[in-house]
Amino acid sequence: MKNTIRALMIVLSIICVITITREAKGKSIMTSKYSESGIDLEKTISELAKIFNKKIIVGPAAAENSELAKYAAANEYGAAITAKKGYLAIPCHPAAKDRRPSDFGDLVFIPGKNKGHAFLAKVSKGGKYRENYFLLKRTVRIPERSYLRGAFDKKETIDRAVRIGAEMVRRVLLGQANARDVLTAIGQSFVSSVKQRISSNVPPPNSALTLITKKRGSATLIDEGRLIGSIQDEVIG
Picture 1 (cartoon, helix red, strand yellow):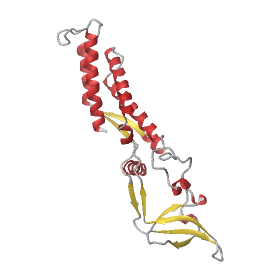
Picture 2 (tube, rainbow, N blue to C red; picture 1 turned 180 degrees about the horizontal axis):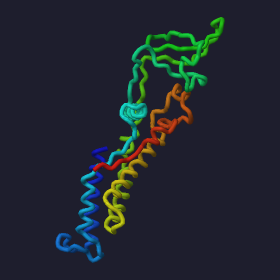
Picture 3 (cartoon, rainbow, N blue to C red; picture 1 turned 90 degrees about the horizontal axis):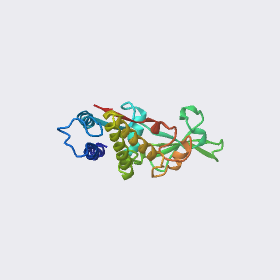
Picture 4 (tube, rainbow, N blue to C red; picture 1 turned 45 degrees about the vertical axis):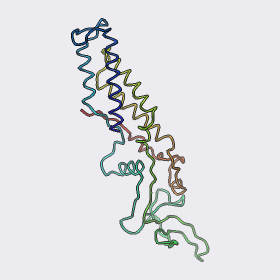
């Protein structure tokens, strides 16, 4: 993200120079305070210079070590979650969705074929029938589904931010906006791109087990809407 913003600032600086030069109609911006268009060049240049002393941060707004922060990082980079002791209980039956093993009083522990997993199941009295309610695993692997880098690396993401930045620079020249307005507009453009990425069903697809526990739909990264709702921008400086 840092390199993306830096590249964008370089592009904006070129836009600033070209636009100011055009507005000044060839006059020296160092010797003439006002251009023929009535723009206060010294004030405008001073305002645009403020852009380069600030930073834009875009990403999930979540408290450090919160469940949302862990979820966001795990999906951006991939992760392996290991039980501190025993197993992680993963619902694998519709009736177990949003519930814990302790909510049931009649589940039977069924060893798996290897030591890495087992099941908690309901078993008929004669033991003839069995329904697995929870898959027990020592380690669960979350695949990488980059929604931040995946958005920032797209050409259309940068192109849109540059277009918006250029329009905001024009408004600064007309006295209709300031440096923070420029940065806020660029930040919001990145927020929009990241949200579009999250909504695009980022591969790989959800596993069958994940689909059982999802509250709605089958798309990746979208369930309760906490991640997409947490994406914000912040101007620092």
